[in-house]
Length: 336
Image: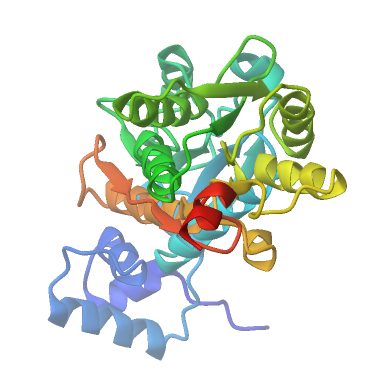
């Protein structure tokens, strides 16, 4: 008959420790004396024990899995965040389960993944009642892309990002700056409101009336915004788009209209997705992969009780200057 494979109980018996101690050692969890840790590992090696996540879960009550909840899998931002989350969880020997929710009926479609140790949301802009719905699962909740008092969050300061972008354009000499933001019907997301507020605050400080165009998000919204701008009596000398996707739509529409960037109009985005480097687009880096990494690390730390459940992690944004922005044409001509 084939030999029965060794179990965690066999390792515990050989090492003279409890099952929970064996589980902590095999998961590299803290709180075990070095000599005990070494004895458990040596016993596991001698018995050729292979770690079974299901077996350790029976002892710890853990599944070794974390649920990541996203509104979509298509836009680059969500994929970048998920990539960072997966990388960080892997470092902590945790698996990632991905759930996509219906943004049109989010409250009714939020999953209650009881087979997970924690839930990470990716840019869902959850209301408090939706957070409480996820709380019913009884596991830690980590929010990305939003800042909520009393809850674990990883985010960037969207307001500061567009404020810095607006100052960048003002410092180049632009005063006719059109801001292109996004909205879905009558709804404007929290991040969209924060980015618009950052732009408007700096324009107000400069004594310049904001010039705002709101369209649907994505490439199409950027193209529609250019159509509106070109129908006006005066063109802007610079355009600041709420996102790189909208900026790419603006870029395409301006190119098709024969308007040179940045000779006629400077263009700036927000996000720093990979294609912006190819197009030499000036943008604000919102480090989505780093957001994911920090969310994964924070989740692992909360599970190990080394950081509190209401920790806030704010990541900095930075301007990535490229060739799509320059001083206004009239400024360059007057100085030549």
